[in-house]
Amino acid sequence: MKKLFRLVLNLVPRPILIRLSYLVRPILAFFLKGNNFTDPIDNKGFKSFLPYGYGNQRNNVLSPSTLSLERHRLLWLYLKNETNFFTSPKKVLHFAPEQAFYKRFKKMANLDYVTTDLNSPLADVKADICNLPFKDNEFDVILCNHVLEHIPNDTKAMEELFRVLKVGGMGIFQIPQDLSRKTTFEDNSITDKKERAKIFGQYDHVRVYGRDYFNKLRSIGFKVDEVDYTSQFSEKEIERYCLAKGEIIPVVYK
Image (cartoon, rainbow, N blue to C red; front, top):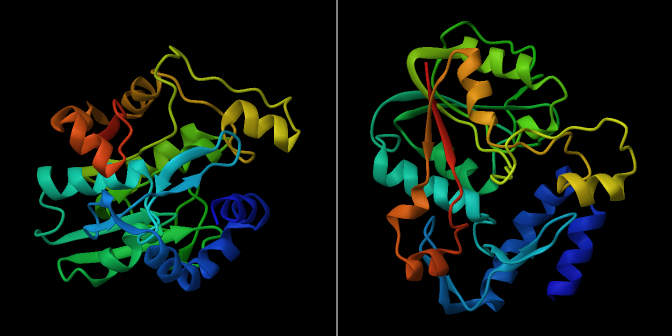
């Protein structure tokens, strides 16, 4: 089953995968039910998680029930334990909404929840992140996770995120990041999809962010907290939730 899953993941376009997943998820969750690992988003247990990845495949990372990855589960735990996201009235803008969150956030009575993307079938508003159709200072919270690595002009995108976030508002802008790199790596001369997947982690990524990512956000005007939230959990909890130890959550404020 896992070999077939890898094949489908690498061959089927993402918008089609999103639609297919609604049919496949219950089947995967049933066959993988167990007690070794727990998805904290829905608290369901599994004997294993699924593999995921386009260039460098990672094993045991994709939850069969919510389709969450390590970063989604970490973000859920952070929002639940450290913020009032689930209880306080907020206007939220969510870029490229992840299935792990979409229906749950949509149903939350305290949220005025707006989703946006150019291609996702889950997006309410089809929009270019570099030219957003929203007013200045419109949103209390912006979730923009694993999006900026796809955007050639990420400076313009960050400026737009800053513009539409309210003064006092909060954003979470997770990205695939190589914390061993001091500076971000880009090379537009690499055009072969397989080579891009090998170097950048995915064929449609345009850079690998280094530790300078946080200072770039600061240069736009954001206050940035570099949150190592896995440090709040025991080794046993990190293993049980299948989190990426040491992953930094970039929490920004205006």
